[in-house]
Length: 220
Length: 220
DNA sequence: CGAGCGTTTGAACAGCGTCAAAACAAGTGG
DNA sequence: CCACTTGTTTTGACGCTGTTCAAACGCTCG
Image 1 (cartoon, rainbow over the protein chains, first blue to last red):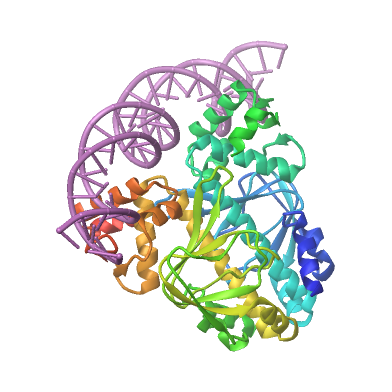
Image 2 (tube, chains in turn orange, green, red, purple; image 1 turned 45 degrees about the vertical axis):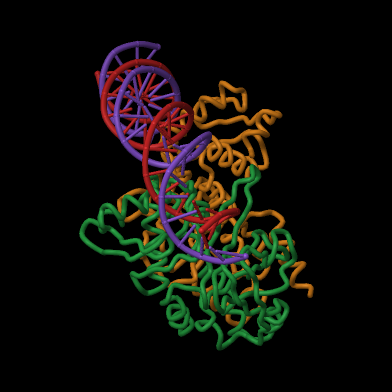
C-alpha cells in the first residue's frame, strides 16, 4: 500500500510544515500582520481560516475554568495553526512578537478535500501530526521534576530549530504556562542549568545548549 | 456546507464511539479475549488492527526514557483505540481487567477510505476527536494541585459513564500515571474528598460523586 | 482461613509555589 | 547622552504540598 510510504515521508520531519502538505492543498493565501500580544482568533469563534506563520511567533492557549492559562503550543515560521475539524475554535491564538501570517480560507480547504482525495488525506495527516505533537507535550507534562520539563522543552526547540543555538521568542511566563510551572521555577531551572554548564545564556532569550554526558542524564 | 453539520453531530457525544462513525466504516470484526495485564499491542509494533472494547477496560500507555510510565488514556466498552496514521504504534495497550475486544484490520479501513469519501471523513474525524480528548487531558495535567487533577479525572469518568455512580476498573497506580501523580497522593485525594463529603467510597473501586456547591469550587 | 496484592495512612523530607524585592533590559523624553 | 519609566527576569526566604519510605489495613482469591 503506497499511501503508507507517503504518510511516513510526511512525518519524517516531525513538524507541521506547509511544505510537507502543500502539493495537494490550495494555498492561495492572503497575508496579515499582527503586533505583539494581538489576538489572531479567540476561543469559541468560528473557524474561518487556517494560518501559517511567515515571520514572528504565535502561541495558542486555553483558559482553564479557574482562570489558569495553558499554552497548547508555539508556532514558528513555516508552522500551520488554527486548523480545526469542529466549527468553533477551542483555543485562542495570539502573536508573541510582531508577526506576519498567511491566511487561507477554511472553506477553500474543505472544498478541495471534498473533491480531491490527496487533499483530504493531507488534511487528515495534518490532524494526525498535531495529535502526535500533543502526545509529546503530554509526556513532557507527565514529568514530575520541573528541570526535566524545562530541559525537554529546550530539546524540542533545538530540534525544531535544527540547532543548539536557540532564540526564545516567548517570555518566561509563556514557557511556564506551556510546562505547567511558574515563571520563577522556569527561571531557576535556566539558572541552575547554566551553573551546571548544561547551557549558556546570552541574555534571557538566547540559549546555547551544551550536550554533554551530564546533559544526557537530564534528558531522561 | 452540510458536512459541517455531520461533523458537529459526530462530536456531540464527545467520545470516540464506533456507533458515531460506523455507518461509513466497514466494521467486520473478529473478537479476542485478554486476561488482566495482558498486552494487546506493544509500542513500536506495526499497526495491523484497530480495536473496539466490547467488555472490560483497556489502558494505553507510554514509557518515558527514564522508565516512568504515562497513561495516555482509558478505554471502556464502546470506545475505539489503537488507531494510528503512522505505520507503527507509539504506545502500548494492555487489558486492565479481563476483557473482550473487537478487532478490525487496519488495511480494511484504509481500503475503504481510499475509495469511499465518507469513510475517509470518518477516519479523519476519529483522529480529530482523539486530538480533542488529548487536549482535555493536557488541561488536566496543567493543573498544579493534585486534588484538582483527581477531581477532573472523576468528572471525566462520570461524564463518560453518564452517571455520578462510577466504577473504577483501574488501580490507583493507573490513575496516578494518568494524572502525573503518585498512588499515595491519589489515595489521599480520595480520602480527603470523602472527608469533605465531595464523594462517597464503597470500597476502593466504587465512587459516588456528590455534587454540591463545595464540589463546584473544586471543579474550577 | 491465610496469603498476597492493592490501598490507606503516617512521618520526614524535598521541591515547587508564593510573596517580595532586587537586578536587568529596552524604550522614552528631557 | 543620561535620567526615568516600564516590563521582564532573577534571586531570596518561607510555607505548603506532593514525594518518599515505611508500616498497617483490608479485599480477593486461592
